[in-house]
Image (cartoon, rainbow, N blue to C red; front, top):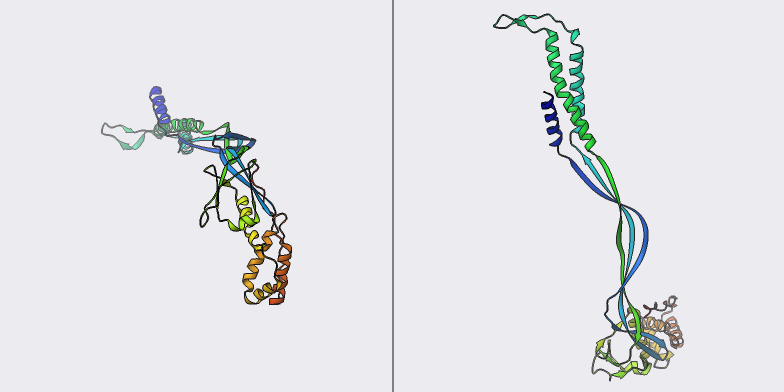
Length: 321
C-alpha cells in the first residue's frame, strides 16, 4: 500500500507541467568607452576658407574612421517557475486531510452499534456509524495527504531565480575622416551649365579662386585627379554664398535704382536684402554699404522700416581633418 501511494505521488508530481517565465531587466551602467576602427577607404575631401575677395579650396585625403560608443551595464535574467494548481492542491488536500483526520481520530464519538434499520441478504445488520466514519476518514486521508504533499513539492519546485551578467550595447555610431594628408593634383570644376572651366592644378594642396573668377564659373562639384571630392554641407554652403556675393557686390551701389526697385518690386528687393545679409558672414566682404542702401530704399519706398533681424551666425566649422 505504501509503495502504491509513493508511486502515485511521484507520478502526480513528475507529470505536473512546470510553467517557466523568463524576463530580462537592465541594471545600472558600469562604464562607457569608445572603439575606433579604420575602414581603409581613403577619400579626397575639400575645405573652404574665405578671405574676401578670395575663396580657398584646401584638398586633403583622409581615411574613414568608424567611432563606436559603447555602454557596459549589468543585466539581470530573472526566471520564474510555477506549477498551475499547486496552491489549489494544497488547499483541497488540506480540507480532505482535516475532515479525514477528524473522522479517524473522533471515531469514538460515533456509535458502535450495528445499524438495525438495514440488513443484507445474509441476515447481517448494517455497519455501525463508527465503522462508516472510520472508512470514510481513511479514504479522505488517502486522498488528502498525497494532495497536500504533492502540492507542497510543487510549490517548492516553483520560485524565482536571478542571474546577473555583464552586457554591452553600442549606443552611437559615427564615421568621420581621420589621418588627413594634404593632397595635390589637378582639380576639375564639374557639373555646371555650359562648358566646364579649364582644369587647374593645386599648389600645396590649395586652389585659390577670386570673386571675379567665381562670377563667370558654373560648377556644382569637384574632381581631384578624376576622383569625386566630398564637401561638407557647411563648406558647400559657404562656396555658394561666396558665388552669390561675388555677383551682388561687383556692381557699384546705386541708391536711385534701389529706390525705384523698392517702389516697383519691393518683395524682390527684400529677397535681395536677405542675400546681402548672408554676405556679412564672409570675412572681409564689403556688404555693409549695399545693405544700408537697400534698407534706406525700402524705408523710403514703402514707408516701413525693414525688420531688424540679427545677422545669421557664421557657418559652423566642419569636421577637422
